[in-house]
Length: 267
Image (cartoon, rainbow, N blue to C red; front, side, top):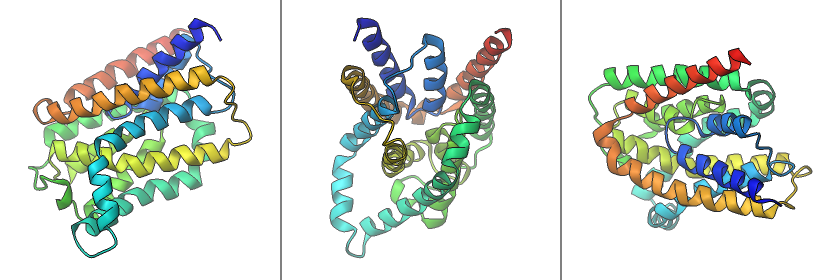
């Protein structure tokens, strides 16, 4: 294995860690950057699975105390059980629709044109909703009730379209129903844990006969890079999002989508 392949794996791991929890679409960026640098990765889906796992483990580490508290308290009536029930409700739409439509979406929609269009439309949606969102009535994650959680879950299901962004779809849906910005981001990050674990292991199961772990260097480098970058990205978002809002991400999406379309049209 040469230095170039390891550097490419490092770069793609950084991209995954940086974009997974920002409303700009990690899948879209991985597709576009992979096309740009000609990154193929090891045979099968070992690399994609490893960087996703690295990113989600970063969130597990950040919220480890909350996770332990929920696991201990979910077996008896109380706030922890209410919290877990709402997470399950938010998780279900994407889980069910993902299982039913995974193959179709992967075969039909995973191309740069779809990513570019989704980036632009998602960017417009973020800007419009940020400017017209209702006054927040929900200021902490425990205040998010069953109906609100289910609505966020349906928003998350839209992220099966590459370029949409899982975090973007959940955060924007939460803003629409009156959730405060930082709370919306935190709910999205915690919801990512079961959603991304399920998606990762589902992909692992579907590709079990194709996966090749022989290029362990690339896999390890991508995993570590995604973990470290995602850890600091999530902390940074939680620290500043209440002040800056999500509008800058909307403009970024529109600009990137237009650039991608221009490049594709000139090919």
